[in-house]
Image 1 (cartoon, rainbow, N blue to C red):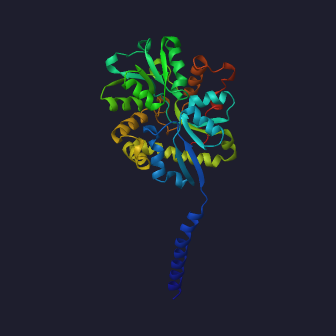
Image 2 (image 1 turned 90 degrees about the vertical axis):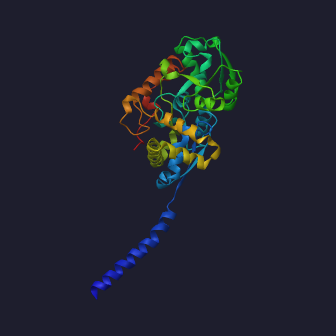
Image 3 (image 1 turned 60 degrees about the horizontal axis):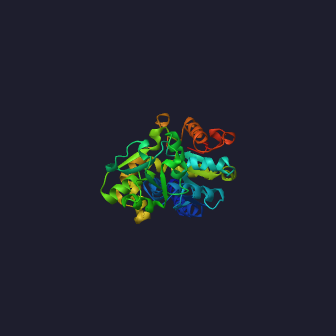
Length: 333
């Protein structure tokens, strides 16, 4: 009888636990978080959608809203103004803003090899940096590539007035090259190069900035410095979920693209996005971070990027600072 009573009580306790636990989970407070991207949706953004779909952010108590951006500089301003919780942008763009007083810091760098390039149709025979002299290049004012374009020119001893520049948004740049209004455009190897080739059926030759020694940190997460001190736990939880998302995308790039297309069917063509996602993954690590988890950049790489910005990018040497002034690894898992 005593054994039966014990069994009944244990069963009742388990039933109560099952009944209470879901309610407790539902009542657990969540943080509404906005992640503003650097641009319209394309391949490199897919990991965040995969993490959201698989519940990585929800498991960390985060209700994530992913918003498209209109250039790294614009997103940096939004995070500085606290109208976005986190930004995913070109980190060197953030560094230039932070050096001038913007309260921003990167909590992890995903692209540790620069994807920036100047590209045109292979048939034009533009294969080296010097080949751009006398050509017309389509750029987008305010985006990360237009800000680093002078660095590329200076690194190759090309005067700004040796190249004609026309301006337009992302689609206008593609149209300009496709229609012959421009010879080249500034774009990412895993994005615009593929889109231009898909749209025209013509092979495209990218000239990577990295191959000219302008190999610097690129896309990463940024936050307002106040958030790092006021709510460090939220930052740690966000970076934990973001790291899991990137790792999952490394293993399953197709699943990452499918998650993004499920959230926004107009994000692009699946096959093209998958190619771009695989090319994005190739930019996640340098040889120094080959065995590290995503976002854990080598501070030497950050330091080299600062040198480039001082030498070519218009950063005042007096405001250069140290890598730790702009990037922290303290919130990474």
